[in-house]
Length: 516
Image 1 (cartoon, rainbow, N blue to C red):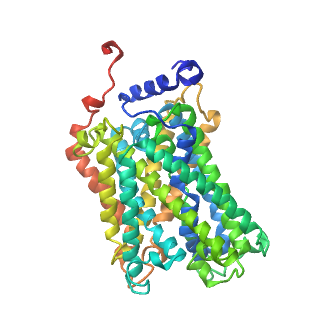
Image 2 (cartoon, one colour):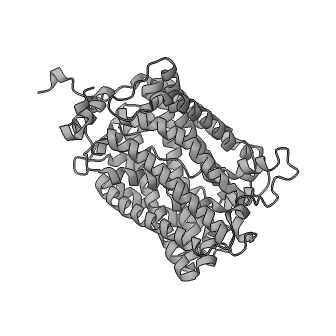
Image 3 (cartoon, rainbow, N blue to C red):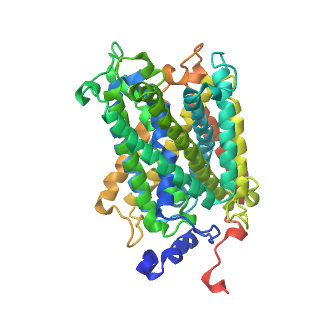
């Protein structure tokens, strides 16, 4: 490919990017309206520093003590290996439904379908899981937000979480259906607020520090004593709190067909989103542990960061930050929803989903796939209803959704490694390239993906059967659920959809010889 295609200064911004689409067999349909900050905002809002840290801090402390903080840099290094591989792919194939298309290009149509199916299923569950985070924050700001009961009933919190989450998903459905520009504007404004609030929170917590990092980073609460693996086993469990946060950076590339010069901007956005999340999130967690008045307070492992902010900074300032968390949750849902829409659209235009032509139809008015926005919103609402009387089962499904995303990433990095070893992978000329480091980084990305997937799926009672009577099918829920989703979905694909696969005529690239 000529270098002028990779250089916007030579007029190759959209021409070169459209050539990348043509290489995959698609014609450009989505409107390119997003700039560099929009793609960065999409990646960082999916990761969502404030949403993830405020939602899962209690889990990390409960199972690993304050020293669980070390899992944050550990997960970052592992995910950075994956992100670097994605950067090379994003520079060469900046396309909607990036994980699906990358898996298809690296491993073939069958691997691509499985990767896309796993990612799409996980995205819809993740949408519901993030929407439930409203319940963790809004009633802490004001009891008025507890619309169902007074919060003391057995199912009050779960039912109220469904109500609040449903409102958020309906809002996200409408915004995403009205086009990427509206979503991007709201998302970018929300991310700006989230970043300013996160930095301000770091400064405020730093001003209230009462102990040094050496105290915090070595305090294990004595967890793991008497267990076969000792504290290491407890630490692996607690590391899930970090693993549940640092993913979704591929969203910056999934909006590639709607971005200006994505071959150049998408790799940068992926790295900036991940690195910014690591630095800012890591400082929030560290300073929160250093600033909380009582490091042994029971509320640290039950109420989490919300408790730390309110008890350390006071009610007024604390509630201001909690409102910023609400904004972060909102834009996180918007980003997750947007990523799911692009993934469904990408699979549908390859006729890899039932009713593919309808799902892949781009609205002439809004220039976005409207039907996937509605379908994903409806499925998200249905999944939410499960939480009303079965919160334990929902927590199992949520955990499994994260594993499926890690597996979907693995279905990209593993075939990419095979291509490298065969000498068939070639980064886009003049764009992001790992050079000689590509092979060792790719190997580390695959090893990390396998190790963390096993760690996430390990049948721990405290993760998959935390309350109520013990059931073997809950503890082994990861293997059972993923097996059903993967094998059931792939069986349908193999016997039904596989014979129909192929870029739909209305989405197919027109060969140069046929261009009027």
